[in-house]
Length: 273
Image (tube, helix red, strand yellow):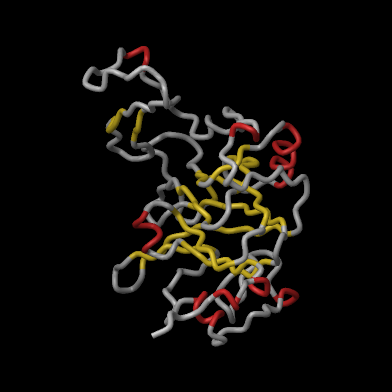
């Protein structure tokens, strides 16, 4: 396995590792593999990994994992647009749908359990494009609803198109497609139709259009998109965030409230003094 930094002016090959399976022959860990045995990541094609892998059959997966079948339909599509702004004080904030995440004064889940927060979102009033409830400051989702997320990437204040690896807590999701520039529903439908078995993932990346460190855009220009579906079958309060830690801490994250009416509030208790 090889790790390599991309989409930056300085891109050193900064790591090799060996994946060792149980009962396999012990590898020579102190000897660098021959060049022809080192994986090569194609340059210039950031989307190279889509549809290159296949799911393991269910009997080969750990029984404790939830591995649902791919949903051929979705109940709601939520479009999330990334952006970056430079504030008057010179600091940088990052956004999803023009909202930069701020820590709530108290944990949302605890507020639900202790009755300080409504357990009954008004689903019919939620914005149908971005799903965001401005009062709750979350994205409420019904239990077992199938949600299709489209991440629209845009250029930063310096004209660079960053890669953003996104992760949703509490759920795995199906990688269904992506592309360059502005999101195309027609292109996504074509990719879904041509994909035999979408891959179940925990992290998905939205890429720049190509691996070119000199590529520049006008700030805010659409520069790539990625889409996935998940089945909201795990009640709770789940964070969705860019897995580049700096981006996450600068605000590129949001919260899903999934099936909170179905949380088992009686299972929470304080220990007896």
